Length: 311
Image (cartoon, rainbow, N blue to C red):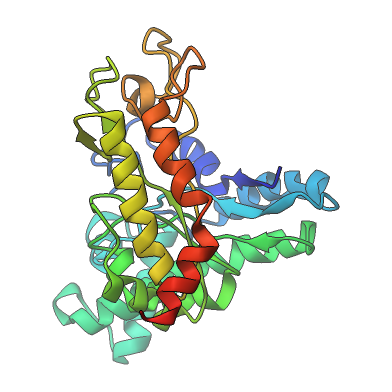
């Protein structure tokens, strides 16, 4: 079976970064990054890039490996320039990098008051490319045989509608990975933008709904609730048909394979009590969901031919 691997250099560095502040930040985003910023400019991060990504050497000659993801749902926020300058100390690497970038762009000792929306957009590309350069160089160093599948974009109002982010992604990624939530179906103009901006195909790496007939509380997670497992199957079919209409989608991952045991308090809280799997924690399949998945999966190539014919 073909598989993928996730390595998390920024995720690993986050715990070390937290120690600089006595284990506590003034403000964090929902992933726990300080001021919702990935610390791409910190020289200490480079050590974690090397250490974490060097672990992929063991997969170098595995013909069943599709490729690598790095990290997951990092905070590529649209106002990253403002946040670096407003919130970080003047001695911090992030502040220094952002200030130098703005001064060079404005040809003066610029302040936050000088920032325009175009500056913010361009800085997101610079900020993101700093991460991309580091992780892709390490991947090529330790395994040049497999694809780089990106860092699993997520935020609809930040990176998913940011042309600079996708432009940079297209320079470094073989396939662009996107966790696509808060939609009953993908929107074709949005999918077209991703392809046009990046020049690369994309893969949907997370999407799901939760069934209210599962017996689980369904209080956590980004996916929406639907009444039954059959409705989950209908959601899957509808979502996939829209992906098949796109000329740039090369695949999808349902999230996730199995529900967690809600009594196992060691599992991730965001996955603990929700019906995300195609089978439950006792290894029993949700058959109405599975049947509808199987129907469309068995007909994917015929559907592609039909949709491409324009009939």
